[in-house]
Length: 270
Ligand SMILES: [Zn+2]
Image (cartoon, protein in one colour):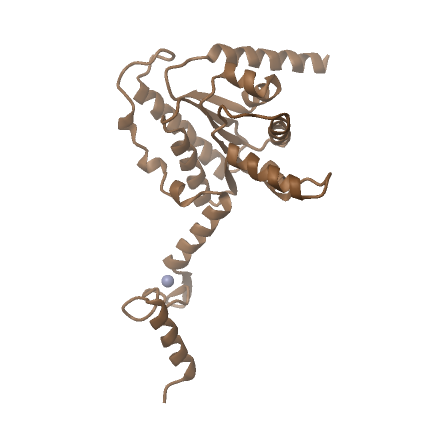
């Protein structure tokens, strides 16, 4: 006589498909574990589920999931020399990817690091690279949040409208305190006083607690200054190493901001 549990399990599997053996996972027979001698090891199928759960938590959408350092397409970048540092565009991108990889390595090893700001026109691989960083961090078990700035501001605004006055939303807290925060597309949007104040609060908190950020933007430092104001631009300059993913070179503005920050610190310590 068949055991009722087996009958139910078989019916469940018939409904849900499953592998040749009738199980979803032929390796572990859906137990989640494989035995090597007396030792139970977590099955590959559960590791994949774990990874997807972590990616979801990090804000990595299915579209971003496959963007990895290993698949970065260098051939999109030309062999022509670019103006600023004597490298070709492709060599320059190699340098930026290497910096992104060591950013991940440093964080995974618990070292304090400067953030990264990836500047470039649309379609220069900024989001791809930012997502590669997020994916690599998730794989190394680092808690990271990937947010698309305009979408995040809309979402946050909605929680502010519904939540009681004065209490900071859970979402805002999560973003301020995430061990690593990726701000994708800090672009030319209509920033209100509220969104500028919000962005400043996030950056300021993260700098004070030495929590790294990665930013992608198609804004030059000048337009950043114009759109977001000097306070935010100075915070970004302070928190990040700037990388250009195209030929526009406004390193002078970055330098000017650095000098301003130095002067301010000098002034504060006097
Ligand atoms: Zn399995």
